[in-house]
Amino acid sequence: MKRLFILLMSLYFFNASAQDISFARKIVDTLTSPYFWGRGYTNDGMKKAADFIADQFKQYGLQPLDKKSFFQKFSYPVNTFPGKMEVAINGRQLVAGKDFIVAPEAHGLKAEGILQEKDSADFIDMKNRLIVNLSDKLTWSASAEAAEYTLIEIDKKAVDKPPAEFKVDIDSKFINNFKAANVCSYVKGTEKPDSFIFITAHYDHLGGMGKDIYFPGANDNASGISLLLNLARYYATHPQKYSIGFICFAGEEAGLFGSKYFTENPLVPLKNIRFLINTDLAGTGDEGITVVNATEFPKEFAFMNEVNDEDKLLVKINPRGKAANSDHYFFTEKGVPAFFFYTMGGIKAYHDVFDRPETLPLNEHEDLFKLIVKFNQKLMGE
Ligand SMILES: [Zn+2]
Image (cartoon, rainbow, N blue to C red; front, top):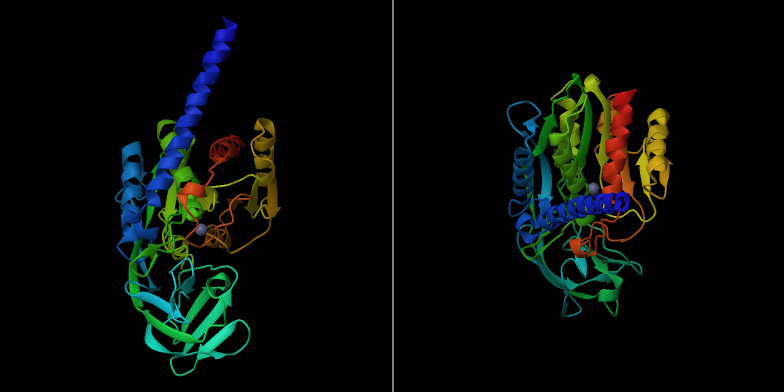
């Protein structure tokens, strides 16, 4: 009988786990699909992602953080590439994303001519303000500024001799007031509803580069959103002593615009936030996680390690100091205790077209879920 019970229990846990991971997988697959176009600046990608997340919050039964709307709207400047994206070097047409990227701040250009070699990596055409740079790894970004030049980075492996002859046709469009929104919700606390624990993650990514390619951003940060949504779903049916808030930020990649806006226009008083946990790049974890602000908040870092040791979750939790590398930053600057964690090991794709759902392991998703739930319990149990 006891053995049957154990068997049933293990089946139950197996099913619960299988469900969690398939939920996460579904969210990542959805957010990285062409419909969302890299959750960026063309094809309405970012807005579609915001609508999808708000709809998830609604389905799970969460309330808007300001009790009116899930969206906290704001705008910021950004350089975009909605149209032509053609680059030919030495008579050969290159493939956007794979063979080359255009610098995020680059000016559009339609021109042809001959490049002058500046050094072994840089080739220029002064007349057209064109710079061609040979690189080992193409890493794209989003830019809030527009340059007067056109910089094209080419993967070294895509050319067999130094770039000389060129023909380019690139459209860029600078948008002064790109409209975006943070998506914010909460589950009301049962005993201390005015005290908050926040779980945050950015949902925007780099969007598309030209008409044909987009950057899926599976690890960055569909993975973090899948973890946040899984936790939102859990807390909706398991209200806690404190209110648990959720913010999915926009505009992170172009310069932490969403989290900056929230800290300047907070929907709950910042002093009521007991702790904030930001997750960005949550899709691997073979080598554990790194926690930014660990040295700033040693007591909470000890809590996290206790939970991890008790339940044998992650192989390692690396402490790190302050860093302005994700959405926790402006909160910390305003006195809100916060951690930002990212997973270590596994795939190397980052800000490139190879950050795809097919190769994202999500192997620590469930451990991260448990770590956060138990860590929050410790915070509320003080
Ligand atoms: Zn990110």
